[in-house]
Length: 411
Image 1 (cartoon, rainbow, N blue to C red):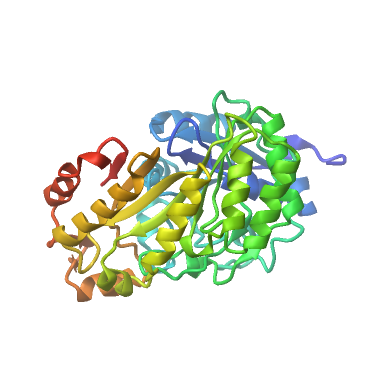
Image 2: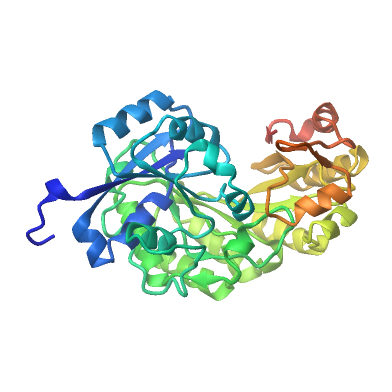
């Protein structure tokens, strides 16, 4: 910091409200780490990270903001915290308010939707470059990093150490950004049109750092951890070589699973009784007409192979299904539940049932309008699923006794 008087430095307060008390938002230390690579920002701005949880009272956050007295507050916006963020932001006169994160759609940003929530600036998509430009008072716009190679690690720089000391905390690891699919209900691929990878050595060093910090569980937050199978295999192989003992969760697409991946997962699990691996696979629906409409048509044979290989290796599976997709009926939904029930019989795993959310800016908006799943009024969009009501969906689950003990409904 040289001879800079910290009393005259600006303060940027980054606020993250996680979904559970065991989690925190990785985006905060990632942003701090990136911004502090810039000498001007590091010498002129204190970046303060504040982590909260889903049930936080807005008045408690407002009290912290008043105590810190920042010139700017940035909120990392997710579906579970957006209402709380709006309440807090509407109470602020000073400092300046920035909204960013996955819940911010470019379409809503351009329409001025966030103006009434007291947002001075709104960032859609990847946040590093736009926020850097904003802090330098330059013109900013949605902009992604050309490469993730060479990016410093927020963990290895110590920017997450305070939150990592929280008892039973879980940590997130990002190995890549981007997705192989272009699903109609998701805008992730619009933010990241290609897949970019971090340095595998840095990823491995981060995991080992977390393990030595006493972290017992990590989540790999990639859309498809196996998008580059050789990349994923090298990471798992190195963790086996180092005899790392912690559990992790990752999401995959079934067509990327092969025998070598399954064997590596199995070998890692056998290192320790603590080495659980949970792999998420999104079936969404077995209705081929629905899958074609939402641009996610994965042949059933890939799921069959992935189930056999991963369960044979001792991997726990988390299966996702979406309720209320276009062309879905009680009969097709029940067929999907029966399939999952048969595949999970005698296995320890999880079934996650999600109600369809038609996100602004996604291709799903046009599809939903065409299929008459939604209608609009003058103030906002109202979503409906006329072919499958809330009670219908719960009925389909209730008749399948095999799955009731593993299913979690998110409506």
